[in-house]
Amino acid sequence: MSTVDVRYFAGAAEAAGTSAERLGARTAGELRAAMVAAHGAELERVLGRCTLLADGVRLDDAATPLTPGGTVDVLPPFAGG
Figure 1 (cartoon, helix red, strand yellow):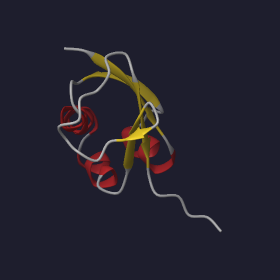
Figure 2 (cartoon, helix red, strand yellow):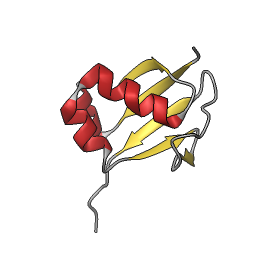
Figure 3 (cartoon, helix red, strand yellow):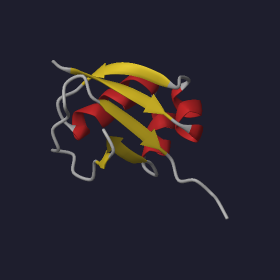
Figure 4 (cartoon, rainbow, N blue to C red):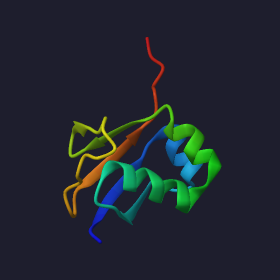
């Protein structure tokens, strides 16, 4: 299985207990499942509100293939003003 680098930001990093890791996944859906398997229900709850970006492109479809060795950013909603 190919791996991708995952970078967690803000509340996602807090829920995962790390700011970065490498996980095995071929698709966006597999990656979400791997993140939840690694970090549990709290991260699953946070992921429901997060945007995933693979090398800067939003992952909206679970079937979207990931680039082996690529980077996926996990971005929760940010408050601003």
